[in-house]
Image 1 (tube, rainbow, N blue to C red):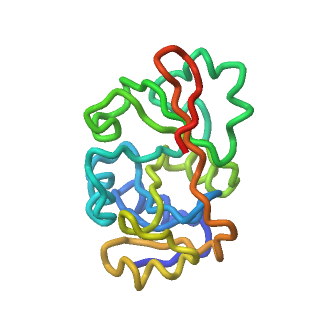
Image 2: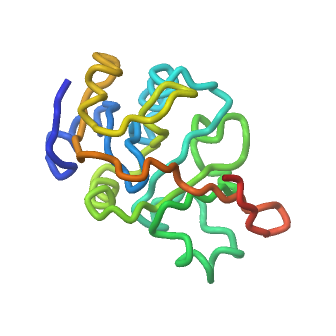
Length: 184
């Protein structure tokens, strides 16, 4: 396991591109991350988390250009109210890889406000980022806890210090009628 002090390290970029998964502090919680376009990395995350494989993962993007499909029309004038920030938005995304849609047609996307994380996303592409914990357990509060928690099941940790509020992102769904519905 490799421990990085920040997300700007070129070795981190390389191993993510090669399929690594690990723990990174996002703007909400520590996330268990891997490249969204790497099916094997995504499936490893499901395995490590013991997550129900029918439950899709949130995809972090640096900007609209990293979405697999255009924003729904309903969001075109209001997206600045949600992004960047701790808001994940579920919408139809038929061009997203099937392993992200999990037999459905939607994907939850989030553009984080954390500038270091956004630089990483620009460098390596979209990342899936469920909370860094086993399914149903509380998320980690300090990055270095991941070493004892996950052991050799993960490849790296980026230690960003203590998570202060420990709240997951807000989750919204764009309905087929074009309305925004708060899910959590």
